[in-house]
Amino acid sequence: MAGTLNTSAPATLRPFAIGTAQRWGWLILALIFVWAASRIDITWARFVLGLDGASKFVHRMLPPIFNPRDELIKGMWESVQIAILASAAGVILSLPVGLLAARNMMPAWVTWPARLLITVCRTFHPVIVAIVFVKAVGFGALAGILALTVASVGFLGKLFAEAIEEISMKQIEAVRATGASFANVITFAVVPQVIFRFIGFIAYELDSNLRNSTMVGIVGAGGIGGTLFSAFQRFDYDFVLGIVLCIIVLIMLGELAQVGVKKVFKQ
Image 1: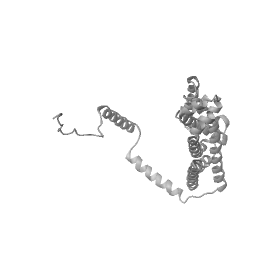
Image 2 (image 1 turned 45 degrees about the vertical axis):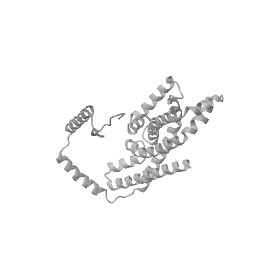
Image 3 (image 1 turned 30 degrees about the vertical axis):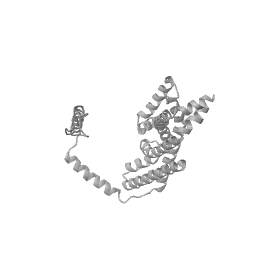
Image 4 (image 1 turned 120 degrees about the vertical axis):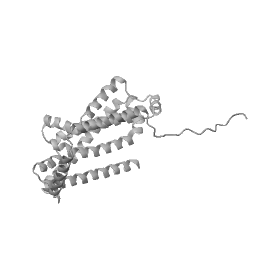
């Protein structure tokens, strides 16, 4: 025979086998978890006491009320305004920042400062940034708009830059070959490849700012968060539940609007 058949039994396959390095990694994570749990005051008695306090808190929240209605409507409408204005300002600022941060369109001495700016904007939570702007410009919606604008630049700038870096360079080279200016290259070669992704990013950021606008108000940056915090301070827990339910409805409407926008632009 030209060859000999290998009749030996195949080795047992272990598709989920864990190597030695992985075992050590899981062991280290388990030790870190045990150490972290031992450093905080978690006891069964405290857990049971917390359940008792939570039951009393929920009992005081029921049934929910929606008065004073004027205060509730004003806070909700202000949150919507903060989200829309911050998203618009964030988009206007993020478009040039994202373009400058794209490494396939700009030299390194331009992209690095732009990426540093994006990183700085993404470093802190919007609530922390809102505290800074409350100290800088005072209480009110302006502080919330500025805080969410910074957050939008950090989020949208990064996504815009990554989307531009993933485009096909063939179309850019073809437009450049016609002698087109840099602005025409952006208009006719870059924008058509990223426009639908940009629309999705903007719709998501508007929805995200709608959620964050309910939080920045807790530190005095306007919106329904301020109304919620005031209700907590007055121990009006039934009104607190009413505000929370309104916030849930507002976020759901934002989700539906996001889906609707995507469907319209995909047609």
